[in-house]
Length: 320
Image 1 (cartoon, rainbow, N blue to C red):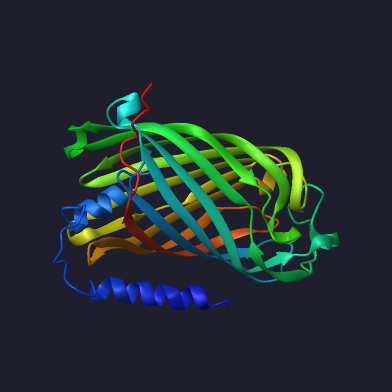
Image 2 (cartoon, rainbow, N blue to C red):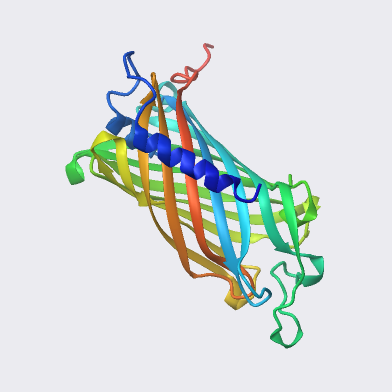
């Protein structure tokens, strides 16, 4: 189980390098793999649904462990857009995205090594001797809705400026205490990006504040800021080079344990399987800044993202 994500990554790379399994001999919603790659990088989407499967393989270290530990996760993130042109005007859209985190394997300090505020406590005398448990299961589900607009522009070679605002929720759905917060949390979310022909640059922001207890978890206060930066250079043939690091700031943690700041670079390939484009990718991330007690050192990310036709057309308001 522990090394299954790496086997999956090898399969992803082999498929990407080998090319499509059969020719694109039928019409597609996209004019080319290049256009499919560009549009699938748009956080507001369009007339399609992206089923984002993200496999993260974190390697962690800190004052409570004598060596690197591992956490392997699968995040299922379907991106479901609802066009609102007929209701609000041209290029308005609402995007809904749940994030369903499935922990495949995680080495986590057990309850005796956790401080009251959540982060691991440093054993007496700074000795690296905290006990660890291996855990699997469902984590806390996150759901956000963004209402925004995509605006065409001729700047920087042409592309789309996109923006969106909305709420985000974190639900205590974890299957055991080690994998959840034990809190209902809510806050704002926002996105801003330029989806250009040659490059893509943007960020998706979320912040959560807990307001009620529930489910399984530590049941301590949640105050967390989260920023998913994304940057890609678009190349012919559906290839992209770039990164998707997630920067976090935990307002509840001690000063040395608040920031996680990764930098990442990876290769992505969008290609057709029949009429359906699929984005495949692998990305390496290094964390120059992370919690001192127990935090991420680096991450190996694999992505599999089929792009499906959306059953939702432009929303037409009901007749009076």
